[in-house]
Image 1: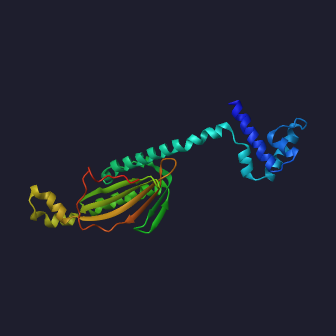
Image 2 (image 1 turned 90 degrees about the horizontal axis):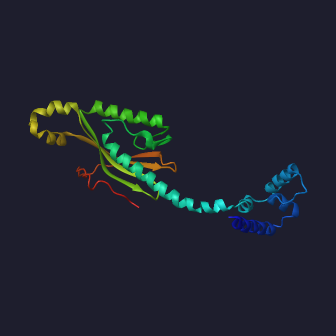
Image 3 (image 1 turned 90 degrees about the vertical axis):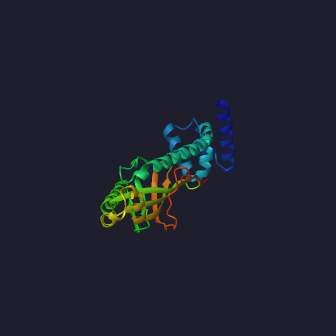
Amino acid sequence: MSVLRLNYSIIKLNKLLQSNLNAKHLSALLHFDSSLNEKKSLILQQQTEKKFQPVILKNLYCTVQSINNEEEPKNQNNKQSSDLQHVYDTLSNTLPSLFIQPMDYRIYNPNLIFENNIRGTRTVGLFQYVKQIALLRTVGHIKFAYVKFEIVKITMSKEDHSVRVRWRIRGISAWKVMLTFWKYKLWNIREAFDSQETWYDGFSTFFVGDDGLVFKHVLDRLMPDENKEILTNDNKIGVSA
């Protein structure tokens, strides 16, 4: 360890000599000059640091510990992948239950940005986001006698560290249930719902930050497909590089 520090001290010295530093500046930066008292040495060091470019000083104070930290980006990438997977799994498990149980808000940053491109609004803060989800749940139950949130497809992208969800809200109004229930047999009630339901498609992008939390949710309108078939659990989930 001491040999490595000596080598880096030599490298620092070479950089300083190439910068045409005088003896006082050199002594101040490397703390060599014992003729100066501590106070004067500190003042000279501060004056010297202000005089030269920050890039040179950064190279000058490079230490063995900072060199060892070159392994950190690899560990950071692994952590980011793990965080992305956690958000992906949480959304996959909780979004389908949006209308019947509370969401898991632990994956969101307190300063979450929510861009609703359907309504043309933008809010900042987890509290505002929770209020809008609660409003959606309330309106859904008021407007529909039966309502369900379904994931059509969910993917995660490591390029921009995001999770993308194509979703669908399906519902049938109470009026339709009351006015058409006599047309259908009880054992055929599922087909009755399928033929009378209203449905809305949308696309959400959740961006995950370095802290592993979702810091931005962008909501976009998605034109409904002619084919209303929902993908099964086996093929509705995919991963894009």
